[in-house]
Image (cartoon, rainbow, N blue to C red):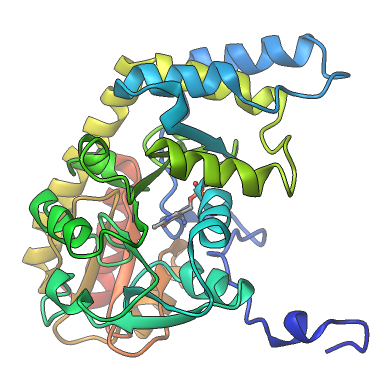
Length: 353
Ligand code: PMP
């Protein structure tokens, strides 16, 4: 607490990002990063950009990147927004579309940044409980609201909401913006981008951090009707029109264009996830039906916190949430096959199988 802080600053409970430890080298399965490096073409593009004119400001309209993403998804450029990671885009969207006089809805178990942004923008959040199987029930969102945010797949549960349910959600709330946060969509889900033409209230948010192995570059996208994209641009241009730097712009364009590379690494992550899921089930773990680059697991006997600590002692870092309803679970990012073999071996020593 400081006397210099505004009442808003004093009232915030900031998001705590997953650990980026510096004490030793861990097998790092705690922040859903991709275990594979980005495409070599991305590195080459960033090097080229570094040798070009960093003296100059970047393009505030991100034209090349917006065009590349628009072409990739078959949308007009006016329906695409590029930002500094999807976190930034979510922050802009909360400011652009949600009315503090009304309640913002999101699932009770979900990406914890939503709560933080709601607070930052003075929004009242109502958390809609997931059902017993950790599924989003769209009927439960039929309450008075000023907007909805649903990640798909959800995090940390990894469960996917079918497009038919998203259609229902959009049709049930035609006067509110519905944000579908697709940070993990490329690992087995079907994107809601195809619904944009039918629903002007839909904003789909994606990121290059996960499937494109570029968490370090900080680039994300939003896709939606022109009026929504214009709303985001109004906020961005009232805050910092140069959100994406020259190196990130160049790398991101190359990442979008190198489709084969990303499809190859994504397929490897998915194959590893399926194999590891079988091994976990054989060790008496409950495993949710993951369509993401992580699994959400709970052991039938041992406490999650104990497993978390013992894994940490063995040099394997996973994510434990000290939070009601999911404190029996661990979220484990899918690493390389070698990393996951080490994880499974460490687990076998802990659970005694
Ligand atoms: N949405 C969800 C559901 C996430 O898990 C994350 C990553 N932690 C993000 C958005 C943010 O991703 P980024 O800012 O790296 O694009």
